[in-house]
Length: 456
Image (tube, rainbow, N blue to C red; front, top):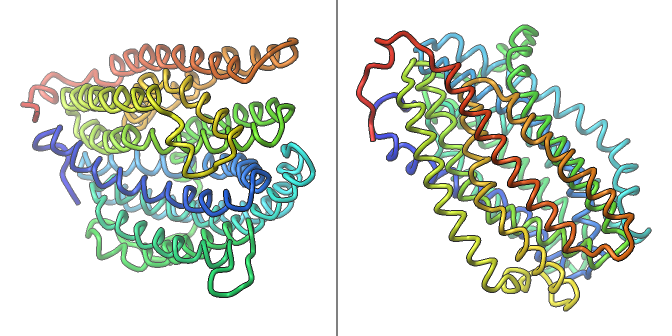
């Protein structure tokens, strides 16, 4: 375990962000590897996988329900030197994650199929989405216990070993993808089913190794199966913090679902371009996400230790670093966005639509970096309701206007992207105002608790 209440904040932030960033890159490689080989199957297959990918937002939301609450409570407990409460929260987070994983499999194999069928631009796309989802669901279920264990390690300041395990699973996925998708060496290609199956096998191996080595990565928390009997009051503590963050992902699911439903009238090329562009954007966001993810346990431990000056210092450095990263990446998408699309498709129409999407949407990268920084701080403070409020603003500033715009004659795809940029800029402003209010309330400690030197 690392004591993040002492020493240089910047050093802690950059050191943890580097490992977290590598881990996020590795995690995203799952999607990009699948996308690379699936793109060789044609636009319909890409559109199908992208359509099924929308449904994974629900799984991501449920994982946030557990991961965010666990990280916040464990980090704060470590900060105030309460090892007993940290262990209790970890046990119950893992217990809740296993129940949620089972529930996900049941719902995914029943209602999930109906959902992806409704989102497909045509029957062929819907069929590809259904096939991919059926093979990918085990990977989605493994996400929950992996998130619980990963959050406990991150709250403890341990980020290197999980990154190495993720790297191993991506290597497994990279080896399996061409074999299962394209039939290399076997002569039996499985198409989009192979993409989902490769991810499921790799993720299953990853969670097994992570659980097996957990007790060796740190000494304060112990993975002990008999301790996982449900204790519902602790579940409520975890969910109370995680629920708003989960709600944020549900809103993202709604927003992406609305976009997919609207652009289906523009054909499978448009859906494929949006799917590729959205995944590239997610990859671009990774450095800023890494900084925000590193800020949460640092600020959380310092909040638990009543070090208000270091909490504020963590946000200031997180926001500055994230902003610098996002401005640089904005320039890349403004100069030559096509080069980011080419590795995944050579269809000129898909390339043109995807490049236009990146060119326009990149104007909100700076705002997204600030939103990430604010979200990390809300997690650290143990109150994520402001995250839901700021994200919910997009229902009014994007979803309703885009539905209205879709029914206007002559509406073009770029009109939707411009509207999205405006709504994200407003969301960033709301997040900053809410964070300022929360810091004023939460950091009202006794004078002696904050009169300590701050590391820089």
